[in-house]
Amino acid sequence: MELNIYDFTPETLEGYLGNVPRFRTRQIYKWIFAGKTPDEMTNVPKDLREKLKNECYTKLPKIDIKLVSKLDGTVKYLFRMEDDAGIESVVMPYHHGRTICVSSQAGCRMGCAFCASTIDGLDRNLSSGEIIGQILAAERDTGERISNVVIMGSGEPLDNYDNVLDFIRNAVNPDGLGLSARHITLSTCGLVDKMRQLAGENLPINLAVSLHAPNDEIRKKLMPIAKSVPIEKLVSESRKYFDMTHRRVTFEYALIRGVNDSVENAKELSALLGGFSGFHVNLIPVNHVEERAFQKSEKATAEMFVKTLEKAGTQVTVRRKMGADIDAACGQLRRAAKRKDNCL
Ligand code: SAH
Image (cartoon, rainbow, N blue to C red; front, side, top):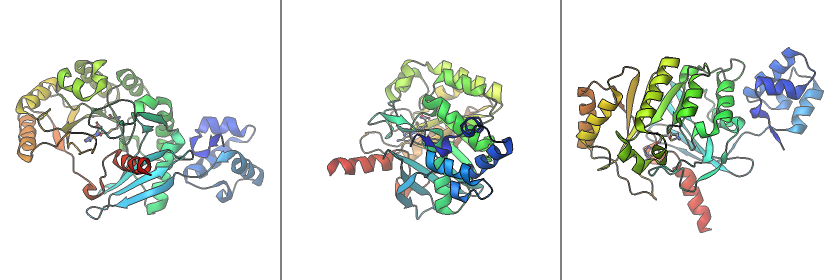
């Protein structure tokens, strides 16, 4: 079936329904993002319900594998899409609500050296409905509302810009998921032109920038994007994002043993960010990926790195590791499932 019902935006739904009153379109839009099937749209005339039923794909992503952490209740899903593409989402219970990490693409073509999602390249973009479907499916499964979204699963969201934007607009629409834009974070490896476009969308979402290095030399070894986007340019565009949206920018920095974790590296990082109060560094111990050789930093080295940043006046936090017992890092479950398939 051509149309995924969760792909509709208010505008495309209006166009699709044709000659129906405005309130009717709105009613149907609300039902869709309440996760209801056409049969459940009780106040909608039967002919419209039939039309939706016959012409649209109305299933949510199917749960293929579900793992629940005994340590902290983190839930990890491997979902199957209509065409069998496998994608991952992770739901993390925090004291301030539930956060979901959604995927924006099946696979990824950015080629970061430490990342599991990119190993087989990009399968395809996810549609906005397939992204929002991860939230609806997880909410239905857990019976709990999700209040925060991070677009940090598989894929580069700015490499699938239009679909990701439709997704965000449906997520923040009060008739859609009704989430606060301030509770949505998009993470990018640094597609600067799209970062600028995003800043101009009048959507106060949070931006996370995957930096992972204090200079181009190290960054080029880890992230192919560094060959086309100099680190200075990435930082100045991040600053621009802050200036245009007034949302603080987080720089993601995975600490990798012997690669980017020295005191020198920390000093260089602070100098690069220049003590700007709109910036914040989030340190992540690099997650081990079977196909990759990288190791996380020694505890003492990581502590020294934090101290050096703090001393230089750089705002820094260390990401709490969630779901350690279920390999909750991005791309790993999908990888494991693929490896198993290849062996069959
Ligand atoms: N493509 C986007 C979002 C997906 S990745 C981006 O690059 O930001 C989400 C975050 O996880 C990124 O900061 C990414 O660099 C990081 N990441 C990927 N693999 C990792 C690993 N093995 N260990 C730690 N962080 C990793």
